[in-house]
Length: 156
Image (cartoon, rainbow, N blue to C red; front, side):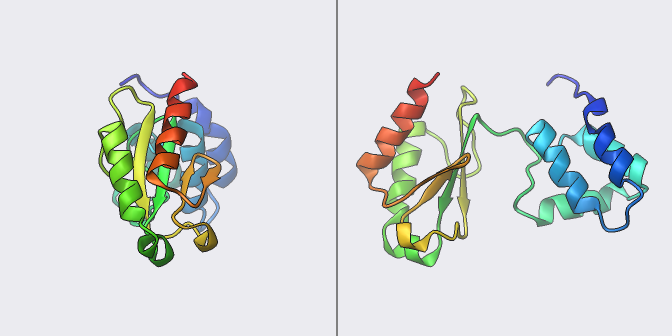
């Protein structure tokens, strides 16, 4: 992997490094910049904030919003909440697995898709539902799911 440019997070740290209770915000902004939390950035944040790397890692691994590895161009978040579950989200999950050849938490070899099963997306009336980046797709069927994935793959 290429070395990351730590200068990109300087403005964030200049503003927040000395602010008590700002670690989550720092990590969120860092992830916004890089798409995940690179190890080098965590080490640098530790030095700038005087927060132990182990504490930073504890926060980064506790909250599901944080990623320690890069994700694909399209991050698929598939809801597994109660409403989605009773409306066949497992069938949608199997369709995604079959179409993309990946499991929960994995990224396709071409770096295009990452699959993440989540507890709830808060869109119960649309169940089963998934989000791909900022777009929400509801009332999913296997056919509709395949069509969405093929359209995204065609964008390349």
